[in-house]
Image (cartoon, rainbow, N blue to C red; front, side):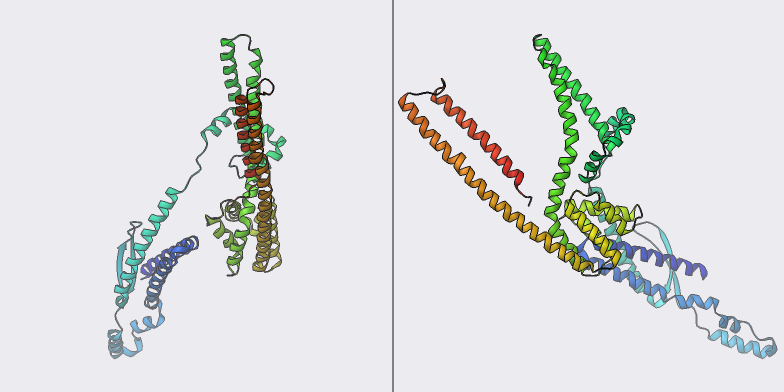
Length: 434
């Protein structure tokens, strides 16, 4: 019976592990709460039925049974008969052994349940195994569909040729390293510098080939020696400026998501949930792409590197590109350390962020109105006046700088197109993200 008891405990451990897995999935999937709750209820019923067999197992170690089975020596034959009658009145075992093969793991398991509970247990077991199989298939599909960042072949090639040199240059590019972290670029500084050097060399080679072709065509075009130098310089400048520009872009996008993410965090904090789970829920949400990446940094520091939540918050606050988000993380850490009310803190921050968001929108509306007045004056009224002037000049037979009226009209149209492009670029650069 000891082995049977051990196998029942192993089954209960498996059930508890399945319940924990379901709870994790339930936190990340708010649309199927009823399905998860039903599975949890089925598994808990199995635990109850297995626990009902514990008294039967404990009878094996009961001292009362031993006294009944051992006849008293002083009682002689009559005592033996009396004890024999008692033994015949001992109820037979009310449990039954059974085995089943899990459809998901293909593992054969042996368990012991009550005779009266056998049918009910089998029904619950069938339901739970079917649900768990479906759940595991969905999880496998989700993992398969998930975008996996594969190692970059270009980064591998660059490291192969230049890593030994770039590792010596790393201490000289601290600001670039900070920009890489703030921009969430997935390359280490040494690898990024290797890619930069590789690109510079390739641009030099391409520039030299272009220069060679030009020289072959005409030997007088030695000025084109500047082409490879210019390409290499542009490549180096691009690699140096790209992380800071990307960090600036990430900072703006975080600012757009922050008011709504803070409102969401305040709502979660109101349920008195464990603080780490707040960040896990926000990170799992697809609505906050850029803030979610910052939340994942916190989760990684807690779950993988073993930091406590306060330390993780302070570390990420020092690396994020957005000052408002850094302030939120620092305040969050302070509230946890001092035992403050997280809900009230986040609600106040959410109000401030929402007010800033509204003011930014109002400011942009005023700026758009100013741009509209400028556009009407320069790109609508001015071309009309210019066209009228050209018509008068054409009738009078006048020209300008030796150019005909047709040429002037052509240049005017090109000028209007260029000014429109500049206008739209400036307007788009000042437009806040939706």
